Image 1 (cartoon, helix red, strand yellow):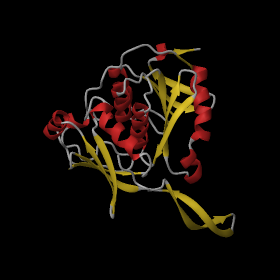
Image 2 (spheres, rainbow, N blue to C red; image 1 turned 60 degrees about the horizontal axis):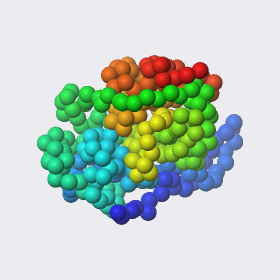
Image 3 (tube, rainbow, N blue to C red; image 1 turned 135 degrees about the vertical axis):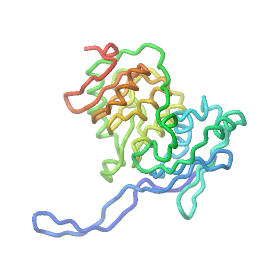
Amino acid sequence: MGGSTSSGSVPVRRLVWNKGKISDGDDWVASETAVALMYNCISHVVMMATPLDLEDFAIGFSLSEGIVDSAKDILDIEIVDDPNGIVVSVMIPEQPFDALKDQRRNLTGRTGCGLCGAETLEQAIRPPRVVEGDLQVSHAAIQSAIEAFAQGQELMNQTGAVHGAAWCDTQGNLLLIREDVGRHNALDKLLGAMSREGQNDNGFVLVTSRASYEMVTKVAMANIKLMVAVSAPTSLAIDMAKASGVSLVGFGRDQRHTVYFGAERLTA
């Protein structure tokens, strides 16, 4: 599988005005570029993304969008730099590719937008997968993960411009973190990394953004039973949590968080 040499951040010169005084110097900004996902040499979607962990992104997107049922169905991934961005070419077997062609939609995604280009309501609002299995997580574990997350976001701490998604065990330990300028992309990268590293679903996802419908749906596709967001959920996210059985926690901040659905999985 091929790889790009792109970086998650780039250096820039800037001026700072602070209380009437001006200073200049160097800074770092998050990289953002067009990433085209192709399946069996046919373009499927173009997303604006941070060009890091793109193999994880391709795997996670393929799984969370239901293009393949398992990472084992991905035969190869080739990542090639292009003058206009990066091309990620994914090879999948004939059966899922035929199904993809039947429901193919040409999307042009934008940062933070998961439904751009959907042509019908049926395409936009997919029935969620119902999660299976038991999970018990304490409120203290959620707080432990929230506290550790800020220090674990290296690209965010460097640039101040990216979202993060973390996989946490039931004790609140952060096992994996992925970052991107797009919140959906960060989550897809995390799901792809979990699949590659053989992580089981006995834990929870922590995200730096609001909890949207699409993110709950992606989490449910991975059979993850708890999602914690640092910001608020939308009404449709709560509806999807109820339909899928995903426990949903919002406003995950220091010393507080709010349970919107699935409180039976949370212990004192």
